[in-house]
Length: 81
Image: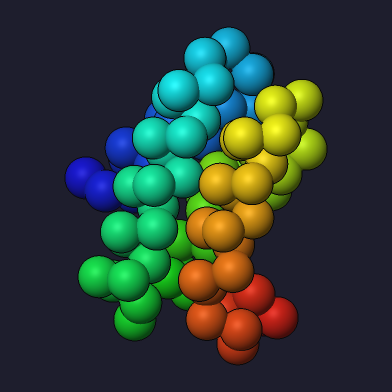
């Protein structure tokens, strides 16, 4: 279920058809996901990378700031894989 939800959100973000407030909420939910399910992150990395790296290049500085904060909480070994 979680994978399905994340895939749908990633697809919407790829199309850049959501408002800034939704980008911010998505990043905040990912922050919660990372802290609660750290052991499951490797299996979700292809999806999570779309959710994080696209907002890092968003035109809104606020979105980029929250996306960067989200990226910083990822465990380093996961990001390097």
